[in-house]
Image (cartoon, rainbow, N blue to C red; front, side, top):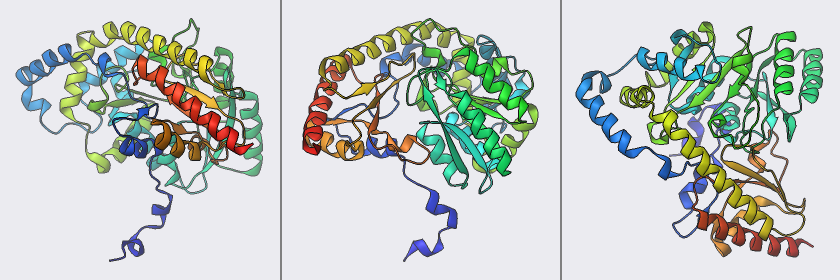
Length: 403
C-alpha cells in the first residue's frame, strides 16, 4: 500500500533528527562527538537506588498511577524553590512538568504557531527546536551571534522591519547561557536590551536554559526570567543534564495563562508526564542530591572542554576555527568555506571512525555548509584526544582534495 497518499500536508515538514540518526549508525568502534549526552559517570546512581526504593515504599500507588497533566503539586513546588537559586520567582501555578524540555518546544508550536507566523531565533540555534516547529510552517528568522551571544542590534533591526511589513511575530527563542550549538553566553547588557525590545514591541521571549548549571568561567549573568518584570518570558529547563536523561523530565515556567494553554495542549498529547519519574526527581531535589552533585559535574565538564580545546589546538590544520565555550556541552567548529561537513561526516565515519553533527541543520535556512558541532561531555578523555586527531586527519585530506 502507498501510505504517502494518506499523509497530511504537514507531514512533508517532518524531518528526521540528524542527532538521532547519527546515534543509530555510529557503531561501537566509532568515536562520537555527536549527541548531547551527559557523561554517565555523573549519574548519581547510588543515591537514585535509595530514592527509587523510598518512592516505591512511601507512595507506590501515587508514583505508579496516572497524575495531573500539569505535574504533581509537590514537584512543582520544589521546582519553584530550585529556580529561586537562579533568582527566578515562581509559584507552583507558574510551573508545568513536561516530558523533557523537548515537549515544551512542541507545546510552543501547538499553542502559538500558525502557518506564516514569525519565530525569531539565534542563528545557529538548537536543531531540535527548529525540527519541532517546522511542522507548523512558521517563517523562521535568524539573528547572528558573536562571542557575546545574540547580536541584539541586528535583532532590533529585524523586529522593526518585520513590524513594518505587518508580520506576526509570535516569540523570540534564545538559549542565552552556554548556547547550543556554539557554547557562547549572552552578556548581561544584551539580556537587558533583549527584554527592553520585548516590552517595547509587545513580544514574548522563550528562554531555553539546560546549560547554565555548567558555567566554567566567572561570568555575571542572570536568567532572562529573573530579569522579567512584565511576565513576557517563557522559561524552559530540564532534569536531563543535572540528574538523568532517562527520566525524560523537564519543565516550563511562565504566567498562568500560558501554563493553562500548555496544560490543555498536553492533555491530548500524553495526558501527563510519568508520575514515577516525577517522584524520583522530587526526592532528588528534596534530598539535595542535584545541588550536591553539580560541582562535580561542572568540574568534570570543564576538564573535558579544556581537553578538547587542547586537542584542537594540537591537531587541527590551519584555517579551522572554533569557539571557546563558557559552559555547557559543545564546541562549534568552522572549516574553510569549500568544506561541506555533511560530506565530511561520511568520510570521517567510514575512513577514520569518528562522528560529529554537521552544522547546516542548526541554521534557519540551512545555508552554512562548513560548520560542525562537537560534544565533549560524553566521550572519555582518551576518546577526545584520539577523536580530534582522527577528525583533523579527515579534514586535512578533504581540504587537500578540494584545492
